[in-house]
Image 1 (tube, rainbow, N blue to C red):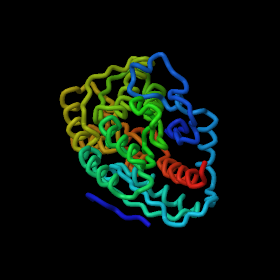
Image 2 (image 1 turned 90 degrees about the horizontal axis):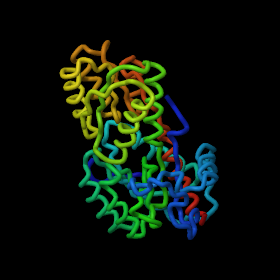
Image 3 (image 1 turned 60 degrees about the horizontal axis):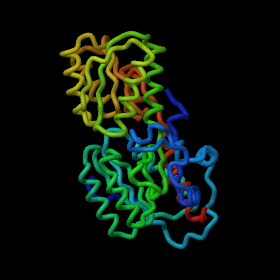
Image 4 (image 1 turned 180 degrees about the horizontal axis):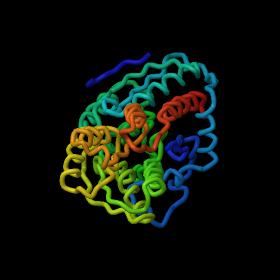
Length: 340
């Protein structure tokens, strides 16, 4: 059963699924595989804290049909879902619906309550966290508005004994040490940046001028926007004219694109760090009759983006498998119920 609370170019590299359950790590101390630049980052990469075989095996389970849970589940498992599903992107809801479908396939009764917010409602996620801590939820799916902003809320949930699944992040915060959430399930934001960079170089050539619509400063934008610009700088002669922080909002994409088109006529490509800003940029490009000159790329392969691709409005997007993220969460619940 589900209830709602509160306010109302494809690549396997995008589907990094990371399990950090106690049974998986035992008494080992993170990171399992230190890197020389660890002190320059707030996080560990997923491959530093996860045995490759464990990851590969779990990905195979996610890609296979569901299995009936090998345990007696006397009462529905209680799940709180804190996430910014009121965003333009449908990826959050797709992950949730996939989790529900897999739980049913696995024969696991559940009671899930959604605590929905917008992508910029950072404080609202704190309010939801406080509420969830006071109630008897066993599992908490947490899709952060921005990982570093929500780090203390996630820690509070873990410290309160909740089994936390971090949705859409594969960068493991160092500040948690060994006291990590049970699961991180994500597509790799960094891998996506390299894929769209590769598309630009191979399809549009090695020279040009571009601008970026960036999101909220933090881990996601660093990897999506920063990873893209670093890749182009290394592999081409594309020049970056301007960076506009649109806070992952459609309005930010519209305003940013209008500014870019007006002030930087040499720009022929606008890189958008999420669906909302890409849709806003497309609106600006079309309203200014610049669609034949200025190309817009998106992020994530959401429903709106796929429609825009079919219409020839959006030029490209790195596509993630949001359904797999939901399946991974359901399988993690099954594993936990089975005592694995």
